Amino acid sequence: MKKIIIIFCVAAMLGACKKSVLELQNPNQITTEIFWKSEADVQSALAATYGLLRDVDGGFYGVRGIELGNGRGDDFFIRNDVADLYRLSTFTNNADNGTANSLWNTSYRAIFRANQILENVEKVTLEGTKLQEYIAEAKFLRGLNYFILAINFGDVPLVLETAKDTEGYFKEKSPEAEIWQQVIADFTAAGTDLPQSYPATWVGRATKGAGLAYLGKAYLYTKDYAKAEETLKQVTALGYQLMPEYGDNFIATRENNAESVFEIQLGDVGGTEAWGGENASQALGVTTAQEFAPSEVGGWFEAGPTDKLFNAFQKEKTVSGDFDPRMYATLVWNYEGATFYNRPFSDFNLVFGFKSLFKKYQNYMQDNELSGSSGASNYTSSNNERALRYADVLLMLAEALTMQGKTAEAYPYVKQIRDRAKLPQLATGLNQTQMMQEIMHQRMIEFARENQRFYDLKRWGTLATELANSDKVGKQFFVPGKHELFPIPQGEINANQSITQNPKW
Image (cartoon, rainbow, N blue to C red; front, side, top):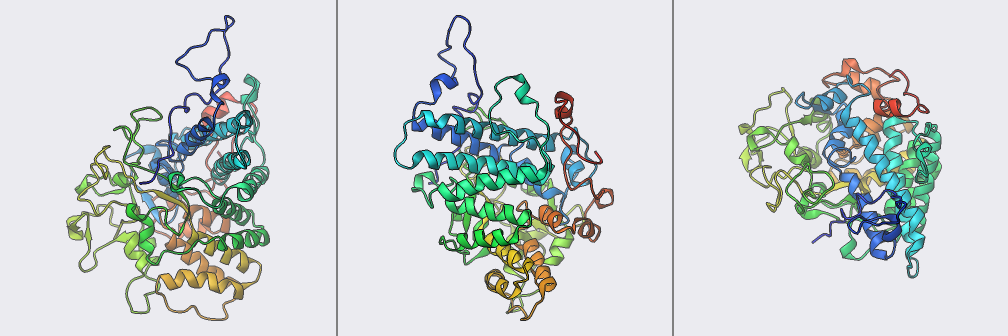
């Protein structure tokens, strides 16, 4: 059974505490003076930092993060049940949007915790290479959170140490290019010093492969294609491979498999409160599947796929003339014999007029999403979010090669993706433009609902065009030069006179 690495004992402690003038110490309060004593303390601090990635309100891989990360794409819609989510999805949000602001706050909480680890880990006696590995792990987590901030907010404050006084909290924004430099530095350290694997009890911790894969992704986002190629080729030598069945990547019984490079560990354990925050009552699963499920099986039906995605899957049939197996794993629609949650698809009411529902990451083997898979928590799913898969490494590598004009060298990596999908052989002799069109198409259908599409379109410079050429609700409100980024939270603007708002906001 996987070990959930989310621990609460230090979550509230990860902030400095001052002694009183009488030098009294509360025995019930953990402070920095008494905490950093053992390797277990370091592990607990890391676990509390990992935990924010699936935080219920602001974690990029928690329920709101999945909705936020996908909601602005041309392949995804969010209905108007939760006003902040709907406004994000329809480009009608403002700087007071709670969902976007929670992403900002949670990312900086994680950065604060990572910085604390880096400042205190040397106080602990560690054997062998443990010190450099823990430093690399903290840098990985800091780099990942700055990656999240860069792709969502652009220019943000660069905080590399815990604040020593009140003035230390009020930093001006650094240019996005400097944020990317830090992301690359942190992922470089992770790719150098993290171990290639851990014992089974520590499954889910960042590895050398995760550090290198995210480093390659950072190079791709910053258009340093030569370094992206060099870095991602290192990942291909580490033993990862595509799962034979695409759908095995999105069900709870196939977690942490050979294709998983970095995975957010979830569990239907802990407390019974799915929205409890960091305390003893918090469930360690997420409610994403319940929010996406239709109302007939106890879901809130907050989000779903557009018909643009539904149609994109049908661009090619398999060599046997069937639908792409990724379509069957990602969506459910009214094909012959289709069932969902052990019921005929015809039982479900598609009230928004779209033709399909998301199947990927749903617990559709159950009768409903009303309870967790083991009954420990209401509405929670223990199905891990696969933050980065080896399929992403292959398509990123193909893109890095293609953008350098090495189109012929990209073929083997695209071929692996197409072969698993049982698609016909790709035509030979594709030029750079044609190969990029193929890669863009494959990324759309390979990574649907995986917090990728919007950010891909943005970095390719095709966001406005693809939104206009879609059936996405709210596309008419998209403003180029504005909605590619979230605004800096209004509360931050009000509190910090050194920070300025993003353009057009």
